[in-house]
Amino acid sequence: MDWAISLSRQAEKFLARNHIVDAFVTEQILKALRKFSGKIVALDIRQMTGVWSGHFRIRSGKIRLIFSVDFYEKKVLVEVVDFRGNVYK
Image (cartoon, rainbow, N blue to C red; front, side, top):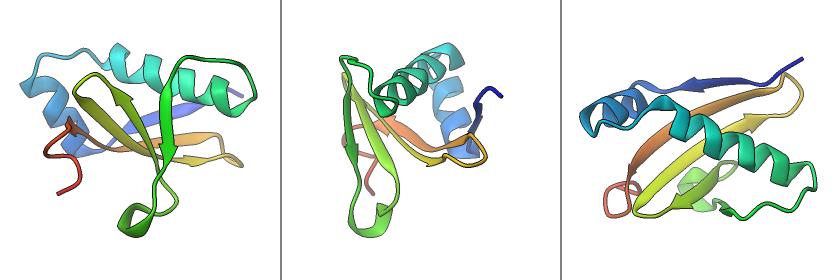
């Protein structure tokens, strides 16, 4: 079974507004999944705390992706994609 990656409405709007293809997000999430499986991947990923507890953050240049992972159902929900200054507001 492959992983299902879905984007929130906010993430879709950000990607469309900034002319970023969905493949960028998919590539970053697939790298994160490879890193979770124990492979060595050059990726800046952190587990979030506080309000975003249970989510992960990927830093890619000035863009941040916040997502949650359901390992049992193999689903990833990308909650927020935004620039560094706006993502945590």
